[in-house]
Image (cartoon, helix red, strand yellow):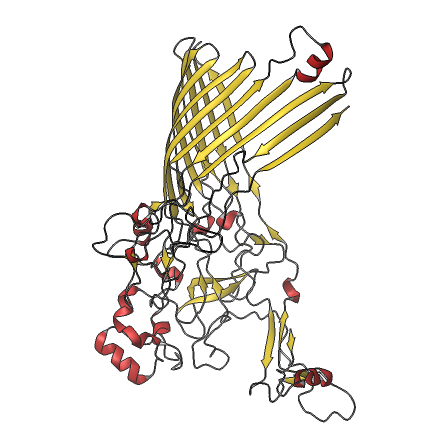
Length: 595
């Protein structure tokens, strides 16, 4: 990317362009890794059988063994942080290792950044027992795994732990606001300026275990914004997300062709992706250090170090060559030689789902079929963000942020129906009967409650901390919902707030907010409702050819479902609803000829 100097005076920018004067430029060289060959290997043998123990009892047994290898790259072009290797510049834990074989301390002497987990065993057991001809009970339990984290999925799937050290480049910019160009793209004879060449750089790869290190006084490692690094936890990274699913239910034929079912369904999840953080592995500041207040943003010079020791006697610089230009907060980070530190596959999230499901279904009686179901459910998890990876008020981050899930839908109702219209089957005009017979009317109606709101804040002063979360105001009573139903008071020219901002407050500097991660004051997003209708007819032309005609209407009553409100405390639009979640009524007709 090239930029010419700004046009001061007028038209100087165009003149600079004509003579090749460059305001700034950046070169990113990814030649060694412009095409990667990431690999995952999966081997999943299984056995399953249905066993009829008696005329009334059938049992299903199964076992699956998922052997999923973690990320590898065909030519070992990956790098990662190993905390068991000392940094060659600072002597503190953490050095960048490269894939493949080579000198210890620089190469991992491996083809994968992590090992394979061989204990993904998934047993399954289920049963069905017929009490009599009209009543049956069923149940099942199973363990299953999914591809995510270090064994596949979407996050970092193609690049694994990253290619730091395999890319390079340089950036150059004017040093005085455009008065003097960074360099000239002009090699014309007689052009006398000295900086008439693109800045040079050392082509990658740069196989150096200190890559990514900064905040030191050592030449080459003085940057206060070095490249971010990725850390794959040796244990968690190889664990696939694990789910234990279970259900138990009773089904009864209440009248002819009509069954009523009552079921309990549940699921627990472990090793799920999450952003709550794992103490030191987020490289966040421990909130216990916030007692230093404004000193945290000051440079780590002798005067500030002495002032910090007076407040926090245990304070010390992390290594002898720590830069006096780096901040005091940086000195207190768990891995102070690094800037961005990503615990890429530290999947410690958990979830729990429980539901009671009621269903009434009728098979075809006089051309009419329907199904009605209702689910009452609760979903909890800790797979969101956290105010601090170290937890809050004596509780770990996982304990503090475990709350109703952002996908929790406590109430869901569905009704579907199909009715083969009885017209045209009697006596009368044969042509009219041929036109009106054979039509089928079908529809579906769904209604769901809204998901919990996630209230965050802006303006927190929590250096190198987690998500800015607000305080709930002490003594505030009742619900902060105001102005009626979501979005109902809005007009074409004015949007109203539907959350009372007085219910929340921005935390004081160097403190953490106390609002729950989700569902503060029992606030939920707007629910959803949908009603669709279809009319369909199949015209038989001959033995095989047939013509199908269908007319459908979606959102039949043309109602509005609103998107969720703005949820940032400290924003002037907190609680406002400004957009529609569903589409307006849509009618369409289709025709198809099969032959």
